[in-house]
Image (cartoon, rainbow over all chains, first blue to last red; front, side):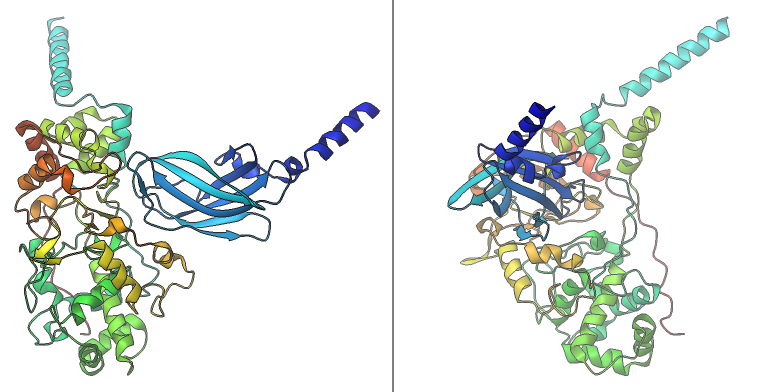
Length: 134
Length: 389
């Protein structure tokens, strides 16, 4: 029992970022994307993305190393046709540590690649995720 | 026994006939077809317009729509170009105001369901868009003061205004201009096109009613298969109105005269930003901010040059000439344009959305048959009720 408690404590101390990084947004209708350094969990609002209809993304951004992470920008394009959205998403940091990217519109059916520019200190990275809308 | 055999033979024959007149649609195709309905959608309610959907606002709008005193010379109303008997357009290649314009008069069918208005989307609400021709010296040239004075001084219009807006018309002419436009928009939003043969087919197909679906002509079915498949028309002509409401460059020449271009959406976005009537301004009745969402986030892109609004396709076969500048005479010519469009003109980096389809004559005829199945006869409009009896 004592050994189990020590192991749990060691795990918690070793992965503070994991412990502080709620990934609940990625459950159900949401997604989680990873890189070597970052984790992003997000879901759309409204839950179903409709072609031509504005929507927002609600996001949590974390580093695996436990450093504070910042969401800088959210963009989307259709890789097949190499065109972006006709709208520019605005990213706003919420009081609960979550971000809200507002003003996205996927104006055509098909595969859209959402890209997330994230930063932790001097390090920045772009993560991406594909969504197919019909 | 003989009667049973006869019945079986008849049933088999009927089933064979049904199978012959219905293509073998895949689940994915049925899903794509389903997204072009249901029709009609629920009535429009525009939160930026406080008289949208109200009977008094719609009635005031109908009278204003047909009122030539809104124009500078007293000879032109909205209905001069947007004629009910011509599917809310005029049948001309170029709109004719005080002068001939560079673009075609767009049909107003289903206009209330849009989110950008005008060929270049310079209007972000139907009421803001309705102000432009009222004031444009090339069109009605009405002038803000003239419209304010009409609502204030004409007994019937003043009464109709009070019924619609809940107060007498005041002395703020700009406010009265906007209110007149809001009533005009409320009226135009009632122009919902009737159900079509395509809608009956779509509903039957989704309900699994093969006999009902089989009544839709085979040629139209083959055209529909092209439309949602190889031709990829539904990338832009998406949804129940057959438009995604956005903008595209489909290879129509930019030049309106030697040395002069129509920049389309690029110029439209400039005019939108400069307009005191856009949804970011003080005339928006929506206090939630929701109605202005697109206007807040829309951005200008180099690719907007030469783009024009993707028109809805309901009632398309009853209109024409086609394209934003009326340069294509018939529906057959439209299909020919997409079959033979010059890819060098379109400058696409990726897989082009518009490319020469190289259709056979049979495929072209099928596509036209499908497009014509989006047409419906329109019942005659009753005369407008009196504004203030």
